[in-house]
Amino acid sequence: MSNLLSRVRQGRSNETSIFDVMYQTGFAGFDFLNGFEVTGYRKDKTKYTYFATGILDGSFNQIIGRSGSGKTTWAIQVAANIIRSFENGFMLVRSIEGGITIPRMETLTGFSQQELFDRVDIANFGVTTESVFDDVHAIYEEKKENSKDYTYDTGLVDSLGQPIIKYVPTVYVLDSIAMLVPERVSDRGDLGGQMDATALAKSNTQLIKRIIQLMKEVNIIFLGINHITQSVEINPMMHSQAQNAYLKQSESIPGGKAMMYLANNIIRFNDKKIKSETFGFNGMETDISLVKSRSNRSQEDYIPLLLDFTNGFNPIISNMLFLKQVGRIIARGAYMQIDDHSDMKFTNKKFLEKYFSNEEFKAIFDRVCLEALQGLLPKRQDEAKLNNQKLLNKAMNDFARMCSTIIEE
Image (cartoon, rainbow, N blue to C red; front, top):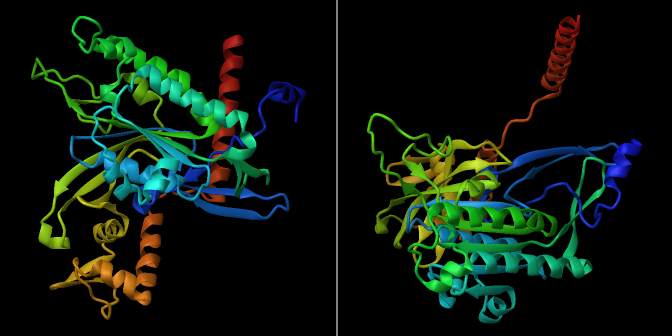
């Protein structure tokens, strides 16, 4: 290591690794859609490879879609799934829109009343730009002051073979970004004449800029619910440019540009109705796509999720819908089957019963599902392609130096 790098690294906290880790959400389709493959070498020079799937530690994520598409329900389930296996993992739910009740929280998280009290902090009033900053800062100080209680060995190693140490995850759910305003506006109870949309966006920008590094350092995963707004084009012959390649020209996301630029993920929900008799309960299907991702490619691909209006999103039936989508579950008259396993037929209504009662069926389903999900990961370059890329880079550098020499002469 050079003296320069040593000098730069002096004083930097070594409590946790700079290498990213992912936390699974409990919804395999999304986890792989947002995942990537990791390859490295241990100290003994042996190679290791694993799938990093889920949501990045300390990341800022937006969940967008129209009202009633299941955004908040999914965020609550994801938050509970992430913290569930950590003794000191906890979540904060800030519901400006006031749509989360305690009984609903118990259903979606699966926590008992005592667990809910111990692991979840809920507020549905007094939520402002300043209070969100205070929340994040308080978590940051608590974790830093008691780092021994909040750090853990992930069981993974970095590319140098060193163990990856992280703070246990804290998940912050904000519902919604579109309703977030500074305290001085909230106290007046009337926005008229006080702040316009530009000023509100500026306050949100300052908030995100102040908390983004704090969240990354102590592993606070932020899930911000937001809406998609439709702009009215005055001139039908001239259309404003879309905020993002995967948003339509007439669509925008409230909260300011920084909310989009600084987000690790922007997750889009597109809902569609289903017939209640199809699965035996009232619900709807929601397609999730990545408008933006820093861990996988933003893509037009989507994964289906099935929402049970009573119990929340069902991860197992969602996997079944995914296998239908990719052609690994085939309809055979009134029944369906996995690939060519004609001896294991099932129907939508009886699927869960068969999955949990038939071990052979479950094993086949899980294996096929994992095979299909791997297709969502970005393809890694093989050694030959990497060597070709190195040669191309060298050629480009040589050409640049030659051009520079000619100009100087």
